[in-house]
Length: 345
Image (tube, rainbow, N blue to C red; front, top):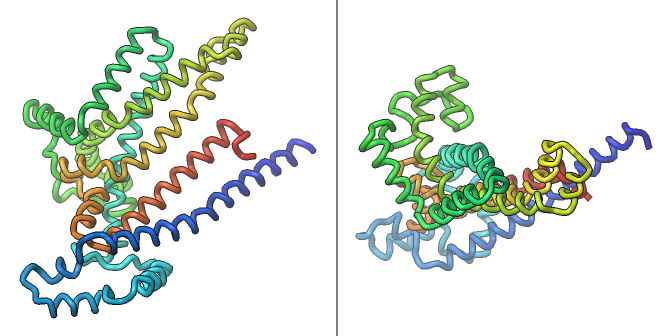
């Protein structure tokens, strides 16, 4: 087989791998939707009471239950829900009185922008620190261990409040920690990422406003949730640098840069897995930080929906989070195939 034929064969296997993973999305989403649909209706609470108000009579509540279809068998409700879901209808939120899909389109990009910025900080700052801790001796190792203990012992909302006190209240360097951008500077909606939308609109004033408000919550999430990534990279990189094949490479006189690249390539997969899991986890874990900074994102919306027994909103948020997690894990798997081609097979 010539080089061109081998390349086409490898691409065919890679594409087959992607298709096989995508096919698994359907049963997973159906199974999760069914579990969530049943479990939230078994939980205490009745959205009809929220919709009717505290002074509503029993007859009014029964009428609202009939209007919402809550008086029907759960199998009938689920069948109607799946029929609407197939058409892209996630229902209407009882709290916001808006379609759930519309709420998610507005709120999910807000959270995604925040956690993406936090992950960029982890990649740019903490991953190099993890490598330095692995090769830098006892001092760097103790500093990384101290950071890990500190990040693990502090709640994220407390760290966010301390950053607000230091940089906004005391030093006056940060903007008012309310919302994602100054009032009246919102750029035209294109991606939902205000920083990107501002750049696309060539509005540097809006970009500076949006970026400045990203800094404190982004640093909060990166500081608290980046510690596991740093610790994994430090451990795997340290083990890799002392592996027998690395010692043999030193004996063969290979350049240090090439040896480091071999060690880093084998050590990066476990930290990448941890980073991907952290990225997915932050979708819900950022709810407290969003509340501290009045971010108005996905996490706040999910918590409010759960507290209010907003069935449609809860189902929609769980499905959105599940789909996001599957996409992130698929991207990770594709990156694995580039780092280690054996994963394809």
